[in-house]
Image (cartoon, rainbow, N blue to C red; front, top):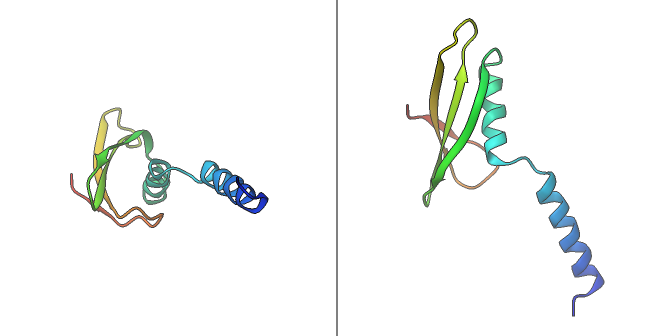
Length: 87
């Protein structure tokens, strides 16, 4: 039987997780902070290995209709993004 305190804790944890931005959204936000005049088309991850996740960021530069792609490697599962551009 779940106590009221445990039920309240689970509810608060669920709401907090639902309101937190996804890692893809965090990568998008960081990319746009570094390149505010670019248009991001998509951000997707290619899965996760033990230590890092690769995020493929497709974007357009100003006055350029070509699509470009950067791949950022995000280390760890924390909200802090330590990125390195690998392509």
